[in-house]
Length: 128
Image (cartoon, helix red, strand yellow):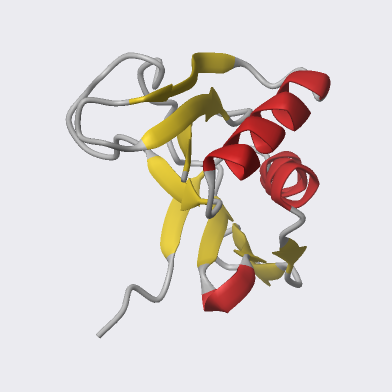
């Protein structure tokens, strides 16, 4: 068993896909559009078949500021393989002006991680 993909609602599919493609060099799939429901989506693909579906529909409501803890989705953790890779990705995020939640550090549960925000304020953990 494995997780096939995670889906994220957004009001701007292209902006969110571009974020993941730029920071992580992820591939962006073709736009799927359902004209009846005005639903659209694209898959963003990382190595080893890991995917995120970026979805949009005009009737999806805005959510509370996701930089604040709330029930539901908390973060997406992307394993980069080493602390050097985390440091390098964190530096790249800084060069791109990506908002930072926390700088690289070793957490109490033993992860070496940094946390940044995507354009919709979803937390992205960069982990070793």
